[in-house]
Image (cartoon, rainbow, N blue to C red):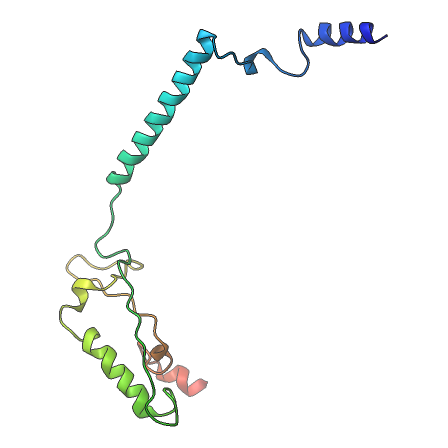
Length: 147
């Protein structure tokens, strides 16, 4: 019975039912060596193209972070760092030394989220700071009155 079963299975599958002839590999066979050479050549070309295309990408001026500055403040009185208006104003004054500098726009992270006119200067991305809770970038009196 097993002999007849093997004859039927191998006759229907035209050879081994477990692997197709394309998947067979022989180290000494010239076709296997040629296929390996072709595969390695494809990998080399793909790596060269990836390296070449990476250099061709346009990176906008000051559009990527190059460094991060961590500002550490310490409260000198018992109310804590955010406990008094004078402490909060002192932190803002320290930040303003940099933000109000004329050259700040030359080294800040530029804001590319919005389009600007041709002759207009692109603004900087606002920094991530807890002071944004106390000092709004713009003031809407109507919203404050309705809140």
